[in-house]
Image (cartoon, rainbow over all chains, first blue to last red; front, side):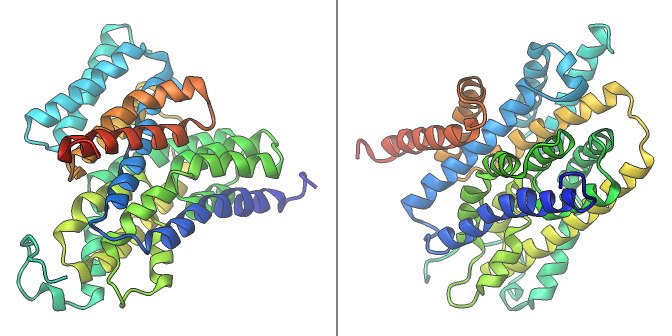
Length: 114
Length: 252
């Protein structure tokens, strides 16, 4: 069965689309009754923000592909420089992103590159 | 309802503008730095999909239907390794749980009581993924309430369509990226997320949740891989909420 041409499409629809969108649909049902100024919403937003922060930390500490070949301290340092530059530049996101990238690439080249 | 709102950066006639005007404004707002960063991430993914043996149709279907990069990467790995449909669905569902609190947090922002239809909310919910969510949490509060839902619908539709097309182009065109370019593209995403989440933070609780989540994420990843994001969200978010609530009004 797993060799049939249509099998990947069943996988994509069941294990991809349904498995992902059901959380969005549940979120619509559960979020519809929340008031914008309620304590419960502050907590829900904190949970969502912490979750996304967890995704961010994993991208920096345990990246996939060639970035994994750079030392972990360089990736953390580059991200920290980017965030500091963002704060120093009155919260201009583009400044933070460019600074982080510049630090990563310069550091990578100094360490011998790839 | 009758509370004075903070004046939005818009002209006085704005609340009466028809929805399609907001839709097109949202679509225009999608031409932005986040769109470029997300495109870069999906260009990187197209290479991964091709190396994993997915066809162009499968890659595009996966991109459009799932529309959350971490879940897409998980399912790509599952398909290419011949994993069964049940374990694959569980792995993807675990990678996607975060979408539920994210959606819950966004809905009260866009909903107009007594006017917004449920199908409209279900439609826009498909576009909720980290990039669009961060952009929405940061920018929607500045818009008049009636304009928020069509604006986000336009933003999400335009962003998804554009990235969808670029993923297809990248699948066909990009042979192999220079390693350093590919690596630098990967770091783009987290730095962008940190900066824009920080500027989207309206309360101390949001900032505390961001900082605590950054620390707890790797900790739970090593402790309970698979369930790590769930625990990071629940423990980190609750801690952030309780600490800042204590600072706001004392214990309980």
